[in-house]
Amino acid sequence: MNIETISSAPYDDQKPGTSGLRKKVTVFQQPHYLANFVQSVFDSLEDCNGKSLVLGGDGRYYNRDAIQIIIKIAAANGFNELIIGQGGLLSTPAASHIIRKNKAYGGLILSASHNAGGPTEDFGIKYNISNGGPAPEKYTNDFFKRSLEITEYKLAEIDDVDLDTQGEFDLEGLKIRIIDPVTDYAELMASIFDFDLLKQALSSGYISMCFDAMHAITGPYATRILEEILGAPAGTVINGIPLEDFGGGHPDPNLVHAKELASLMFTADAPDFAAASDGDGDRNMVLGANIFVTPSDSLAIMAANAQHIPAYSKGISGVARSMPTSQAVDRVAAALNLPCFETPTGWKFFSNLLDADSITLCGEESFGSGSNHVREKDGLWAVLFWLNLIAKRRQSVEDIVHEHWQQFGRDIYSRHDYEAVDNEIANGIVNHLRELLPSLTGKSFGEYTVSYADEFCYEDPIDKSISDQQGIRIGFENGSRIIFRLSGTGTVGATLRIYLEKFSKEADAHTQEPQQALAELIELAEQFCEVKQRTGRIEPTVIT
Ligand code: VG1
Ligand code: CO
Image (cartoon, rainbow, N blue to C red; front, side, top):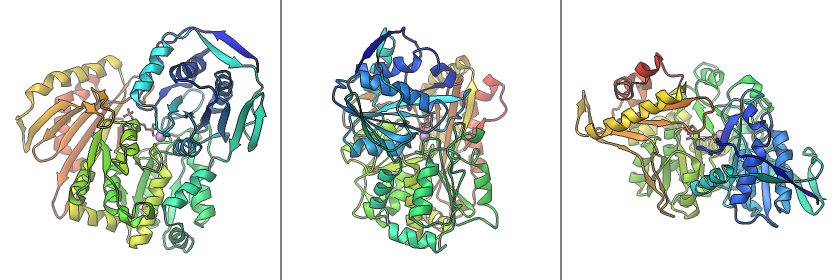
């Protein structure tokens, strides 16, 4: 195989964020931009020679072009096997599984997740290590450092690979396997859940449902699993064909971006269950007739009901949530005497805990939940978990959630995002909050007395690595919290996220409307961070 060395010059903006490197497509299309990053990744890894690499993405615009470039760089860097999803497609959780199943060295996942796609929208790339999980910070710091020094990359002189035909072939010593993106993942799901029970429930109409794939990667996965394997009626999956621009929408499963589905669930025609997933298939939104399940509650309910699911029926070892995720799961852990961990935002922080079997289930408020079956959050897994639960308990989503609140109390929760804020203003807000923190503890604001105010710093319990500046927390004596942090996945300006949480033990907790119940905390948050005053905005861009 002929290998060219191409000279290049570093870019200074290739620092991976919460989940890989995300930029506008036009940034990735700059000369050598993608190649520089991929070579920086390979240079930072110990030795790629003779190793196997998994490759796939969410099918967004530039996915195919990027895969052809990566194949040539991977070949030139000594990998001897590439496992690629047919059409260049792999959902993030499926990629994680395929890395693990094949004991691959790692994988490159092409996605900007819930960010919009298309020629003028976003693209992204992320490296996952051999446990199937996102590269931890010590890796991503090395990738960035290398990208600032890079002067050349290697490219194999080979033809473009036909991504659309499944099979295995040899390309001048490089083994290429084009695999069905769904099969392995579907088998994994069948090993976790009670597929016989689900078949019965879905094919008989005992559970009626709608799944919105948002024209993103879960289309083929959901169609195969829900309709073909489990016998749900054709049409159960909507927007099931992946499109390069996701049909022009934001493939972000929340009440704002999956509005139609959400509204349907509050009408007389609502099916029993509805769900949606994001661009790369790792997020989930879950709804029942007349009820939206917050992701934080979803995690808590899963933990409290794990015994109903075959794979977890013998018990779970522990749970974890990201810091801004509500404390609902903590209450379940306390009641069940389970270890409970609080990690920074981003799935990479769960991997060590999962590898050490310190936890079995984990989740984030941002519509992410998962378990030890892979090392990514997993949208369809969460959907199947809920379906299995409804079928097993023979109760509606609403009843399950209300019973949960009755037993554990309710953590009323909301997140307010201010997107595309000028970077200087956003940094000003964070600095202002940092200055405010030392003066807050002990102060009272109406019924809210501050019990702690700090900046979250995490020490990984397994490898003892430290991640600081992971969000500003203000906790109150009554258990309420306000959290502020800047997003690490946006591509335009800065996004300020404000997380609001209030605990209620009242018998009528289920009747409370979150924005009303949180009104005082919302005002307090503004008093602390001054986002409206400093940006001139009158309301958040997105409320979830
Ligand atoms: C957001 C979410 C975070 C999630 C990350 C990746 O990050 O808040 O919880 O892990 O997206 O999700 P940030 O830094 O913008 O808050 V996904 O579905 O992109 O892979
Ligand atoms: Co995602």
